[in-house]
Length: 173
Image (cartoon, rainbow, N blue to C red; front, side, top):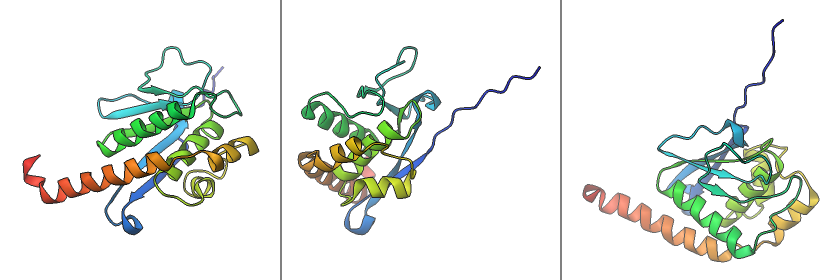
């Protein structure tokens, strides 16, 4: 008797573009079930689930209960956002995941989109990552009300500095 095993794979990619109309640089952040994440030396995994996190490689953990929102301090959430964006700016392949890769993953991707300047981050994530992203009204409200202004300013400065250094001082790398 043949056993069928569903192969876990990412659900999609969220494009992040920087600078005026994305002209300067950009990267993609991959999302899906965290168990589909395959750690490599150039990858960076962000787990946003609160259950079943043993035996997995974690670079960052933001434990969010299923169908819920982060219960950690806003400062902790902002630090996870900053560290995730820094990894992407450093050229790491960033993967964000929970159990299914829709609700909590979508929430975190929407916070990243908001921090990088998207005006309607939930709609952006649903259009570019998955229509199933951000599963609950509470998650959508959390994204709408969460203050990312300090992360946004940090990201804009850091991305501009990186672009400038890569273009002007390319020979020094």
